[in-house]
Length: 254
Image (tube, rainbow, N blue to C red):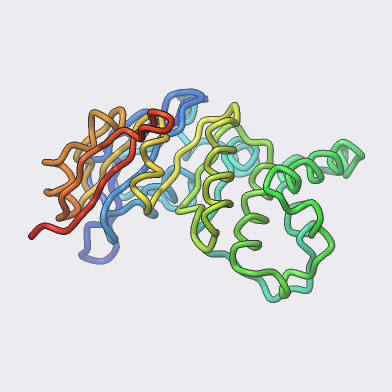
């Protein structure tokens, strides 16, 4: 399922946060969003999820304006994982993941064994199957993040939007979660802080000061010139001799 933005902009008060963002996320691809803090990555994701109303432009889901779609349909098609989400309710990890099935439930379609299977599978996909009965308040930050991702997976949407999903995760779970996202037969947009993680995306979109500066395959986009101009660092893509994988070598500008 494709997701498109057309001349998208968002302003709060007198501050222009995003301006003239036009891009297409292709069906089945993983698009990485990168840029310095304050570049507009989180705002762009919220606009793409339909959580914010654009100040200018619009978002289309499979060629249909997002603003014209019912909220229930959007929730069935787009899953959103924020940087941080918390609750004071006394719920278990499984309870939190079950919320992902809400868009699909109704009086005519109540909870069923199929929903149980989906929730169990989502917990297993993020390595939280053994902790499903744990109370939310006893989970670590990384465990909570994995539960949020499991909730999004349980939603069974066609588009997955994740805002820095590796926050609070140790290195092992960072790699396993991003590998899972890339394997899923979904259209995914992921805001990333670690630029080496961006190398594993199909394409990257580079934001700076609310504008889209570059869009394309990471090896073509993450040039030394762009890295210097956007992140104020020196960087080169090297090849790992062990497996031929690309690695971004970053160091300060002297």
